[in-house]
Each structure stands twice: as structure tokens, then as C-alpha cells.
Image (cartoon, rainbow, N blue to C red; front, top):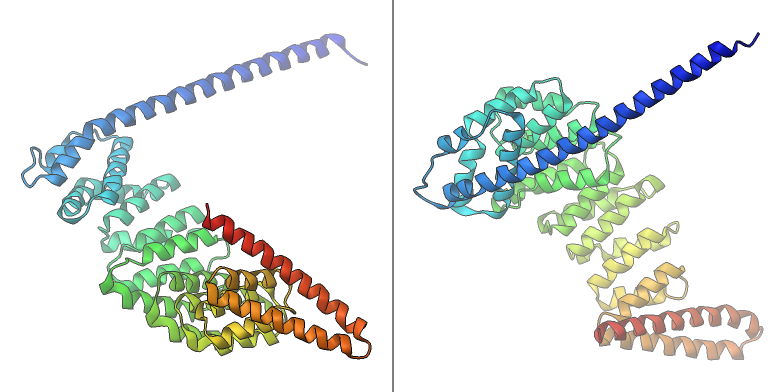
Length: 398
């Protein structure tokens, strides 16, 4: 039987509980916001105070304060250390030469090295990530830290593994760096952005390291990793102008089987060979048009063959202009309209020759059946040319 008093008491109790919960959440939100505001103001004051001291130390051969004296001014709170290292890293990005070297004395100071070593071995994921960022920037990695970073780089936590892999790119041994990349690239949960960032960190950009970087990238392409990741690697090699790898990429392209899971890699290789201007690959690239149609591969081929730009490649593109699917047709027209007067003349000659062939069709028996599809194709092409020309004119007068 329904008991009204018990129901009323339960309702009152629930109301009180919800009210208390609301007040708690309101208070917690207010406290969290105030805490964030406090640390934001504190960090700004911290930066204002130490910025001039650090800059004076980096720029002056005889600074007013030594590295030890500057660091003694920092309290031993974790946040102060993290604020200081963050400021050093920002200055490291804008300074160079002797100033940057002197800044390195602060970054690699034993106080920070010891502090972040302890952080690396803590249970907290955030602590380990902070430590990884420090060792990535300092490069001060001893055997104990190295062993721990290798272990952390295999973590199930993607963010943590990524941070550790980036830190390992500061190791002196190139084989350690390459193995770290390979471990990470074999994961199934990584993003294209992560791959690109790791390649950027791995490549020092120094002329003396160029050959080692190129050889390492070639080795990675021969490993059993996802073709989509290999696509990013070859695109990076093309974009960064690894000319010494052009023949390797060409031979690699010829070995790849033409199947759906390889389409992205094939497209990347064709694009990279165009960026490296490896014209010997043109016949192999043209052969892909005889295989099962894949629009992205054809689009990459159009761009690369246009970059090579000799008569044979341009004639090949024109021959496929009528038969190509719309995106490819549009790309071919763009390459002829926007790349100089000579190409416009070639396109004009092609249109005239096509008109002549149409005249011959009108004389033949059953002309109407043959003529209509060709007329539709010509109409599409002329519309595309008109759009491309208008775009070119508007761009030139902009």
C-alpha cells in the first residue's frame, strides 16, 4: 500500500541531495575557474620576470647572472619548472648561433635534468609526457633515460607513446631514432598528422645529415607498415626534395602491385616523382592509364606529366582529354590553360583537329549515332576551357 509520508520524505531527501550536489558543482566550477585565472596571471608574472634575465644571459658574453644564479631564483614547484622550460623552448625557436648555445646551458642544467628524470619514472601519465617534452628539447639522454623512453614509446596510451617517440628523435644514435619511428608507424591507432610531425622531427634539416635521413626513409619504405603511412613518407621525400632518392622511388613504384590497398601509395609515389622531376618515370606513369580506372591516381599523373612537360607527355594528356572522367578532364584543362601560351596553342590545335574529325564523321554513314557522344564531349571541354580562362583572367587582374 502506498505510504505518503515515506514518499514525501524520499522526495525531500532527493531534493536536498540534488541541491547540495548543485551547490558543490557550482562551487567546484567557480574554484576551478579561479584557479585557472590565478595560474594564468602567475605564469605571466613569471615570464615577465625571467624573460629579461634569460635574454641577458643568452645575449651577453659576460651576463650579470650565471646559469646557477638564475635557476636559484626559481622555486622548486613543478609548475615553475615547467613555465621556465616552456619559456626557454620559445626562445630557443627564435635565437640562433652562440645565443642558442648559451640557452642550451640552461635547458640542460643538472637541476632540470634530475627533475625531469624523476618525472619520467613517475606513475602519472602527465608527468611522463612533460618529461618526454623536456628530453626532446634538451637532447640530454643518458642510458637510463633512453631505456625508459623506449619502454614508454610502446605504451598503449597513444599520446604518451607519441611524446616518447618524439623524445627519442633527440638520441645521438640514428639507428635508435629509426627504430623508434618504425615501432610507432606499425601501430594501428596513429594519425597522418602524427606521422608527418615525426618525420619533420626526425629530419634535422642539416646538410651533413641529409644522406642518413634519406637512407633511413628508404629503409622504412621497405618495412612492413601500412601503405597509407608509406604514402606520407614518400610525399615527404618529394616535398623536401630528396633528389638522391629519386631512382629508388621510381624502382619502388615499378615493384608495387596495382591493387586497392596500394592506391594511396602509388598516388604518393607519382606525386613525389613529379616534385623530384624524375622524367625517366613518365612511361611507367602513363601505363597506369591502361589499368583499372582510379581517379586520384590519374589526377596525380596529370600533375606529374604536366610538370615533366615535354611534347610526348602533353600529347598523351590531350589524347585522354575526351575520354577522361570529369575531374581528370578539368585537371588536364587547368594544366594547359594556366602554364603558358605554348600550352594554350597546343590545346587550340587539339580542338581544331577534333573539329576536323567531326566534319569527317558527318560524311560517314550512321553519322548521327557517332556524332552525338563526341559533341557532348566537345561541349564539356569547351565549357571547362571557358571556366579556366575566366579564372585565369580574374587571377591575373586581382
